[in-house]
Structures are given as C-alpha cells and as structure tokens.
Amino acid sequence: MGKLTKQQIIILSITVIVALYGIYDFFIAPHAKSVSLNMKNESTQLEAFLTDITAKITKGPITAADNYTISRAEAEWKQDPFYNKKSLLDWIKFNKHEAKSDLKSEPIFNYSGYIGMGNKKMAIINGIEYESGDNLETEGYVVEKIYPDKAIIINKKSMSRFEVSLQD
Picture: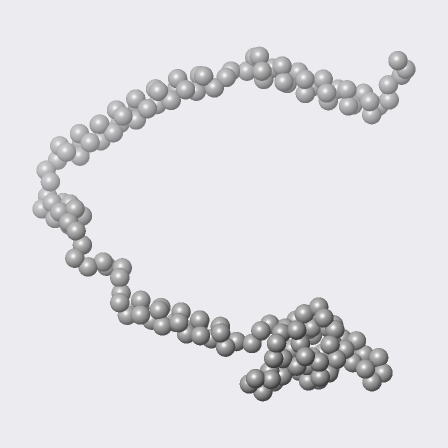
C-alpha cells in the first residue's frame, strides 16, 4: 500500500470514529430497561399524589355553591347552549345561495399568451391557440377580439361578454 492522501486519512478517521461510537452504543451505553424501572416508581409516586389530593379535597365541607355546581354539571341539558336556530338557518341559506351561484358562474379561462404577426392575432387560452371568431373548447364560448393584454370572450347562450386579462 502506498502513501495515503489527506482526503483518505480524513475518511478513514471518520470511519474509525463512527465504528467506535457504534461499539460504545451497542455494548457499553445503558439500555432502555432502566427507564422502565423508573416508570414503575414514578407511577407509584403519582398514585400517592392523587390519593393525597383526593383526601385533602374531601376533608373540607362542601358548600351550597359546590353542591349546586356539581348537580348542574351532572344534569342533562334541556337546551343546547351552543345551538342557535337563526344562525343555523342563515348558514343553510348561505350554502344554498353559494351552490346556486356556482352553477351560474362563468368557467375560468387562462389567457397565457399572445401572438401577433401582421394582421393575424392569436391568443393562447387554456393552453390552446385561438383566433378571433374561433369557438373555445368549452362549449358555448367564442373568442370575439384579441388584444396583447386581454381577450374578449362571448357566451353564446346568454350573449354576455367578459374580458380575460393576460396572465403573467
């Protein structure tokens, strides 16, 4: 074997250190068995603490306020304090309105590119190239006009027009 380079010496020394740590961890370091013995001791201490607290609490006289609080806590509710019928009806009405508005909303168009060569203008909408007057892939929509910063789309059914801005 020839002379070792500085890089080889560093790699070998790190390997030796890792091997020594592995031997220490596997053979010498204490294992988890000692922890389980401590848990038994701590659990007995906890039980002693709880019995001591329980004894101290029950020693004192129970006041009328304590009796009332305990009886109210154990009794069944006649009416849920968190239930508000008006709020529930408002929430249901709001969700129905949202569902209806989702049905009537226009589809989302992504105008992502503009190509202009002389008189020919093309718009890239939802990843597809269109010229003015072309039907969109989404049924019932037509590209009316194309500008470098926006495209005007018509809904043939409702005859509504809307602008779609060029996305960055």
